Length: 267
Image (cartoon, rainbow, N blue to C red):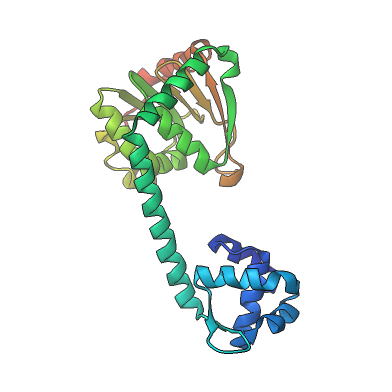
């Protein structure tokens, strides 16, 4: 059985804070109990117990027993997960409707205007930053690809090609539909990866190289440089250096274009 600290840590992933986790675990061990009993058992201050139990009730983790004194009944863990899943889907649906409403409203145009006027006044050297975590890094790449107008070049590893196929395939497809040229150089692609990315040739031109590197250049204007070895780096620790500079981008473009003609197509 997992230690209680580990359980409490994992319960944070489904939206419970420390007090909520402790009181719910205490109630699971009792089945039915009063706020006072749970407070003593969980080590949660009595002054906080009622508020926390009310929160757990709203989230679907417990049920308040009818009658006096007030007691609480534990909801079965599998039912709790079902409640959490349904709530997440409901919240996501509401957020999606809100985002769609904003996208179609004058607000988004006003925000774009404000952004462009602000960025236009910024020295290009200021438009440099680090993107931490592989998920955030790929979201940033996706946004750059979605806004591409001319061309995208990428150098990546074998594992990186698979990730890009799984994560950015739709963005590549839409870029190709906009007549944006997508070229990828992959270092030493493994046979099993080649088999898994079959179809990427429909949205990008892919060639093999012996030179391992990780970067992306969009429209000859923006660069995302990934300086860490993705095979040795924890995804959460991965990082990308984003630079908006034609001069900097041209350096990587020249290196890419010098390699491109002599490399063998992947498919």
